[in-house]
Image (cartoon, rainbow, N blue to C red; front, side, top):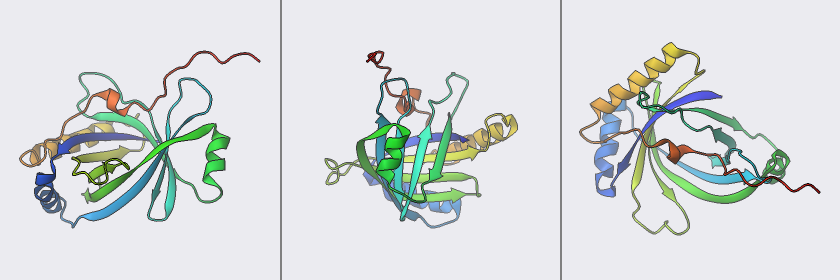
Length: 197
């Protein structure tokens, strides 16, 4: 599990080309297209647990989870523990059932990505559901840095500063910000106590 630091921006479709070209110049690379199918799984039993995500991309399947971001007005970026592991073999549905989870819903993420200085990952993407595939929905832009451990304060501070520097340099075309923490809460609501059989 790593500590992921990130900032986000909303992007209107008419500004997409300008933003992508600005990121190509900033990162010194062409945009790389990506497409992910993300399935949400929730706990079978009631309780205060995390949702899990199965991510299918480029012929591979990954299991992802993340904790609620750190709180505090002094924190200038989203900072949360993040886990991702590739599922190599076997029946995915049986695997999730064995973990105590059931399928809830899914959606598609489609966009382009860049890497700056082998450190910051930028993504410009749309979130598509069956209802929204034919609509000109708004884009989301993310930039993130993964730090191996949250206890490495020097690395966390450096990653935070890298994000803030990029935010400043790109502000003329992309308005990055720190969203509210509740947008990243993956906990399921705590339900009533299970009945004793």
